[in-house]
Image (cartoon, rainbow, N blue to C red; front, side, top):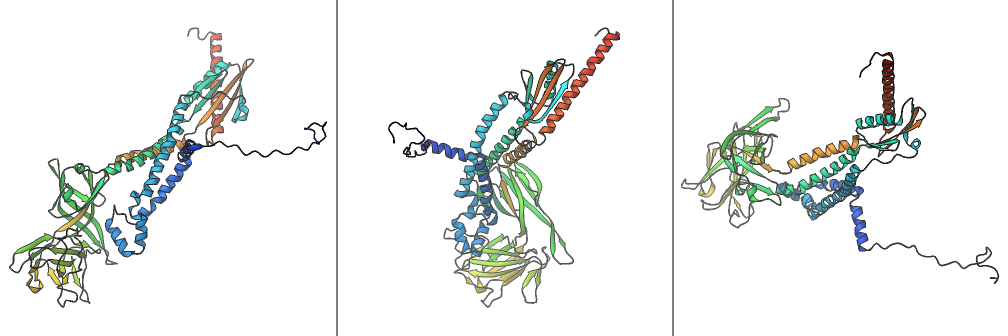
Length: 549
């Protein structure tokens, strides 16, 4: 470089400086927490979580759930022994109580709350704020129109415009010789109500659902159910359930009536109606009531639903000396539409050995060509019981709960039916038969009916109903209430007033231009009417037709 040439001369060669790195602020722990919170509480994240929650709920409708259908889970395991461990490890049989479903649920809950709180604060401030100032150039806005009001004043035109705007439920503010008007705050209010009601549904189901309980009970005719924990056949309580929630009441099954219709073409029997007549007691007051399918009765804060029905043959077992050692109605579970039913009798005491019998009940027994029995009709025209008998340890004394409607034959000796060489026991109503080896006798004594009822207490119904109504109402308001701003500018030009109108939509509003035009037309119409009234008053005063006011 020449010594007399300045360093910034265009011919000078300057060594390029080392490129400096991009200076970025460090977030730090607080910054990352703030960033994560903003991402979680964004509306986009809330929508994604809501969609994810809907997808996560799908397995609950595809496979049986332990909380609602434990027997269905057992059957699924038996039918799919290889697939079951995989699904069980993923907790798909406990979908709605699984940690992964609860995590989505709680994240959605937090996201909605974090999204709604700042929006609510901002909306509250907007409700108290004044409409924005009039823009300097209305001709750049939507629906801009001009109009010249003859023989008028700025004050008169703005007064008429303000009255017209307030009539249209606008909030109006005057800035100099202009009016700024705004309406449609209900749109954001409806949006907030929608999201708050959605939180209400989540909170109601998540919290109040912990106090719900439901279960099932099989009632034989003339039997009474007492609403205490020990009298339920199955009881599935919520996480916050307490025995004190069981309000005292009783339900006694008086009778059960079924109506059937035989299809002459197909020979298939179709059910028409089922009615369980019961007597309820609540607070010392008895009442005769009826339970039908999809028509439950309400008692003690619960709803009692009719789920199923069948027959409960009374089976009496006597020892060799004729002493009665067992006599109970045994509910037989229907296996087909003609109520061919399966039942189990267990006699643990009173005989030389414990006795278990696996039986079938046929309401209208018909012998097939193969010699097997079937039921031709669901009513007891020719009731028949058949039993295969087993002796041995029934496992009732080992402290392990057993299913009353199944009989494990492992370790038992079969003494009738099958490969024993002895025929199965076949009993008509009122008939008895001898058990092998002088064990005793079995009698088919009576044939009452039974019903299975579900007793359901759900404290979430009222909250979910109210929240659902608010969701629909808020959604409709947010969809159909437009958020608009209108401006009117008046300028005095001699005896006339030059009026300018324009509008602006907050959000999607395809009718904003039409709204501005309709308001301008309405305002011009009022101005014309006012002008005509003024001219008529002047004519009347001038002619002396009216001298006093």
